[in-house]
Image 1 (tube, one colour):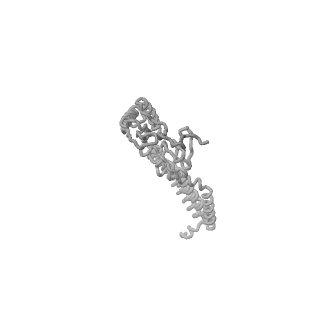
Image 2 (cartoon, one colour):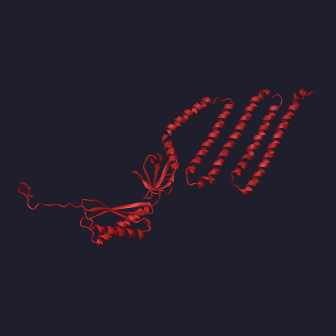
Image 3 (cartoon, one colour):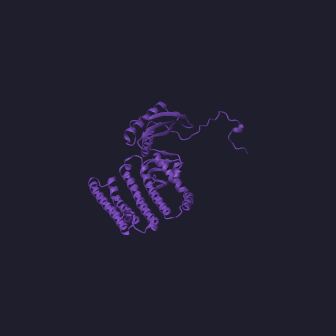
Length: 364
């Protein structure tokens, strides 16, 4: 019997198809066993390693892919399947796209989770902690979306109008979610800039002040002095002048202004004020002792000669304590030294003689 006759024999073709399927089935079983052995060895070393997790997941999809590929080749080898070749090829393509797409989505999730667990949380920048979970979701959606479009295209569905419709729908959704998207991108800016982080004491121009609890994608949460939670949209935060009392250093300068009467001895006032300020530095735990107090007279006021005294506190909260102590001790010391702080007064000077028409009497 010639080779041509053998190749046209239905039984021979069926036998070839069965042999191809058995060959790939055996290869799939071998791959499954080998990956299982590798998985056990890797698990003894590190159960949370990236390679170990990838091997655990790829064990089944890779084996199934070999089985279905063998089945695809076997079906093509069967006799009288000429009219079904396109259908068989389409079915194989759909199965392959599903398995590969699902595998890519799962692997991308494993890689991002591994990076967040091992690297992102060890860095000072919190941007990757916030950005990577969202990137993980978008990447998964994108992979499944592309896989779906490929499947629809293979089964004969025209995806051109579908893509156009998705574009119009996306534009409508973007317009509807414009405030939310504005807050989202503003949150990206705030996080990437790194100027505001959790634990900072901030103050918005003409707005709230307090400790930052969390910088999220849509809003930033601040705990005020009244122990209330203020939620600030990130779009507002990004377009407002914000004072951060934690950077470049938590220490903050304090300027206390006062004034003494014109009859006071200014040398004595300066000496006593510096003594009081130095005593506050030494006794108040919230003050910075390495920076000496600064003093200067700054104006001839209506009632007093004005001056200011500068100290430094360790924190924004500590600045209120230091200011309180300085004012109390300075007031007590001035009273002890008979140094007068005038009330707002006006000095009236009357001439020695008053004309008749300016005698102070109300005309009749």
